[in-house]
Image 1: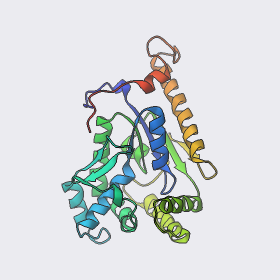
Image 2: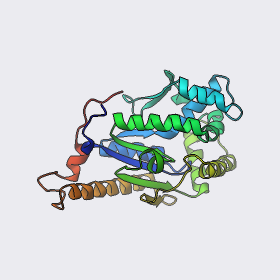
Image 3: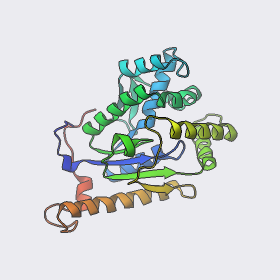
Length: 265
């Protein structure tokens, strides 16, 4: 999509939250239900960490090396795949995103101000090229897309998030110990909430949702309903109070189904 695309057809939905809160899975399913595209920003930081490690760089010791990788190797998604596959410098690193070495270093990478500057701009570029988007991360509603039409903050207890992550890893055929994963999540929470640049926060205008006792389907159902309600309210405001079925703007469903052309992959 070109940057000159109709801004009235843009629809950005942000899902922020801590590690293991299920943002990626929920965002992907929500995007599919609403007919929007899906951006996994956490994958971008993981992909960069993996690329640096594969290049012989220790993210915990060589910040300049990681920054150089971020600047030198563009991060792109293959939007023809579902979910989109991640490429760093042309290499498909999707298979490396959950590897232990990547997971062990991603918080270091995400805390580097210059890396965040590069990736935030990359995310905003994606937002300009794919203006109908569900995007998830830790600073999407607060920093990257502050004017998003709908914002949510997903949370759950650390113990619940650790159990979910263990199940996810085991489903992928990997051995995982709950106590180790829990310690990693607690450490990641501390790093994410205390870093100076783009810390994890709940945006003031975001709806907070504790998913500890909710099933995946219930979470997606809730968010879908809230998005449709929000879109309908905004459409009514654009119609000058005529209601979502007013002649000037159509229904909320019309807005969600609105086609955006000139997409870029």
